[in-house]
Amino acid sequence: ALVTEKAGTPQMWEEWTASSCEDQKTELQRLHDAIMDARRINNTQEATELSEKFQALAARTDSIRDLQVQLHDAVNRGEYLRAHEVQKQIHELEGLPINGAASPSTSSSS
Image 1 (cartoon, helix red, strand yellow):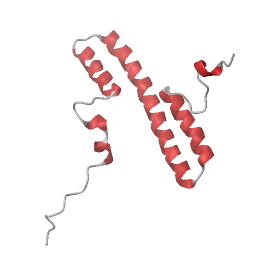
Image 2 (cartoon, one colour; image 1 turned 120 degrees about the horizontal axis):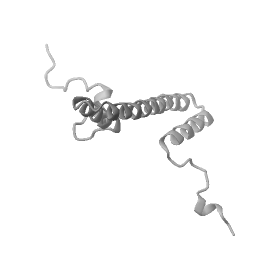
Image 3 (cartoon, helix red, strand yellow; image 1 turned 135 degrees about the horizontal axis):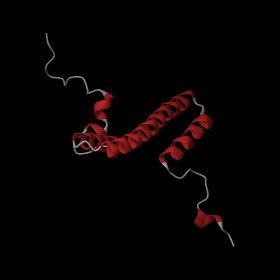
Image 4 (spheres, helix red, strand yellow; image 1 turned 60 degrees about the horizontal axis):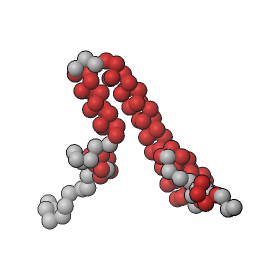
């Protein structure tokens, strides 16, 4: 007999991300749309500049995702020092303050 009382399988993990929602576009999606708009009106200079920004941001995003996988793996293996190092790399790429670093306002004690 077919099971009809239970919900189907969940969506793929890619579909769980906020970027799949129409009202929440990522910076990469906005850049892509701007590149397509520039190409539609034959503004090749703007399209080239936006493409360069897109490539740089995509490379940074890929690096962050790779590091997030490494972080997850390190935690699962119990390699907490390695996990901390990877987390610092992620924060550097994201432009976030690194835990344990003194902020300029607290570093002067005189």
